[in-house]
Image (cartoon, rainbow, N blue to C red; front, side):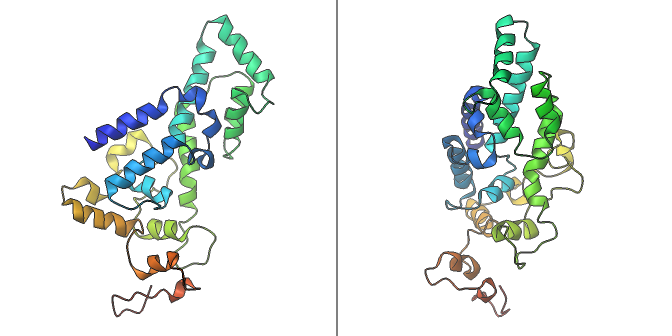
Length: 253
């Protein structure tokens, strides 16, 4: 029933999004929308973790893409439908949109601006400017790789490294994250979904809810170990290396 509710909520968030969601076709702009907040809140409730857990980790733990991925896919599908229509009015609208593409309040500008957000989108930019259809499958795979790129950058790092990236993401990626694969497109290629898990094993087993929630909190840095508590403590320790675990004799973080 919970998964059915999630599907319903996500479907409601997609209704008409190819028209109204073009302001939020990037990750940064989408995370402030109510649809994203509701979707993330449901996933946190499902996992039994507190609010404020790293969004990237929650989405990866539950096998989800950011909601703007679905909005962008619907928008590109809508663009292809506009081009394939025999309606002369729609053809005029497409031409007018391209003529007004320099105005920030137009649909075409917003789509082109969002495409500029990821570096491998030049072919899609050229297609829109030339009034050509876009291969939706290729676009979705390119967008997936752009989203997953923030994880791939962490492959050669550990949580202990000094780096500007999120230490919580590095901890999750190093110790817990479902493997992304070594070849581009592997994680999100529909043809290969049956060859790999899309959820962690504990979420696919029938285990007591209190154990499942304990595992979720551990994996997503929602626990009460010292390394996490000191992130939010008023007398925050100045160095990550000093947050030694106080529940064992290992004298390590």
